[in-house]
Image (cartoon, rainbow, N blue to C red):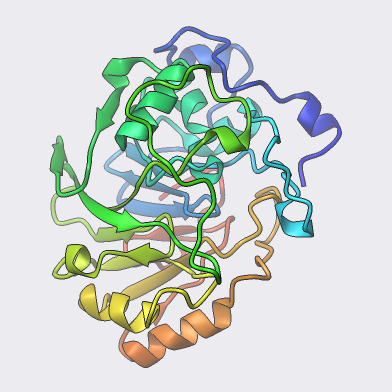
Length: 327
């Protein structure tokens, strides 16, 4: 967990720089940006539901939560008053030079680091109206934010993003944390994790360039079966559920997606541990049972359990590259 000296280096989410500051300018202030553009398409898991997708020298981020601070969630002492903050040196080491950031919903383990990324790189952010209002309150320029509802198919000069309406996962009592939406800016800038409501949930189907692989990316473990039917992605990054509240979650989802060639489980790690080691499992998530259920539902599907330190190619096979280089 990020404690002690690491927390001392944290900065609040309220901007310390003006909106639109470039990644190069951030680097001159000691925020080193790493990662070389890939020659093909590559995927790197950023933990939780986060991804870095590189294709043709361009970078797309999905739910990039990298600061990963402690809220007490995993030791039974969750504190909703935990202050939002970001660690620039941790975030910048993983993100490269993104031009797009896709946000599935606005809980802190998805949105926390997005204001810093948007302000320091100039990347455009795609998200819900709630995400828009939160980002505006946190100093992100309006022209950087693209509001979507689900159903849009957006062409970003060859990178195609299909926005899929989705649902947030629920606990054993069919409830979920911090519901609510915003239709106007909050009265004050968010300060704590409880200040970030879910704000509706999205999934994304991303096609990485002409003829590139298609990836379906979830941020929470529930879905609109009719909305995903017929998407037929090459890769499906599916959230592992923490309960059985959603009826026949795995077989319904895998069938609706058309039995993807590769399924990648996400959101099963302890996201209050840093990315410096091997993933630590969230004890509430049964990763093995999820993987077995995928295989039962679709025997031809290959299940790839991702690692923080591995860069994968467009078929989710390790490229042999490390954290700082891509091929």
